[in-house]
Image 1: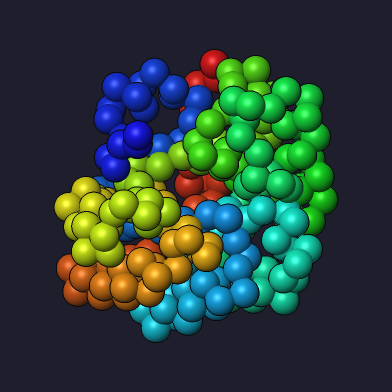
Image 2: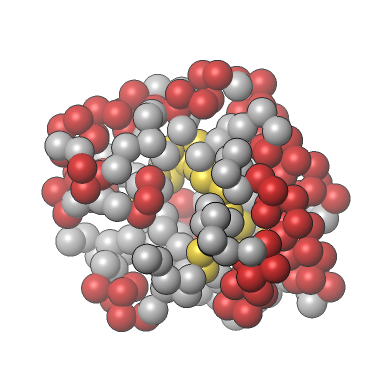
Length: 214
């Protein structure tokens, strides 16, 4: 079970996390989890370039090791990278010390002060430690559902079009499981919001309001 649009009550309950970047401007923040991927990530980069769009890629450390040239392309083309652990660990099922060490391992090759927990699952003890190490924990306002094999590509598109507003952080996945949907949805999302005058920007820590610590 997951929520496509993060309710305001959840954002208030977990205020140490960044769920969106409030703005009166027409700005959206596309994010892509679990790459780099040999096919999906180059596709995403090509589509972003067509629309002069920037995005944020939350990368798994072991995938960066496997595809260093693709990771370098992300950086060279002006996008932001974030830490998504070295081995895509589920924080709820992992001891805190092991979890933090895995993030540190990824940090050796992903120089970023942005962190997103895989599956959005992280214990309070883990989040406190991550915050203390100067990471901003980036969650999301809109979940595309591209990872869900029970959701059609058309439904995935509507999830984004119907729920994204200025300042929304939107989650896609540059992964094998999501690639078929991504090929359909991403060009349409970029085209739709570009026509409406939106800009797509990468997340920078300077833009993120420092949240209250938990």
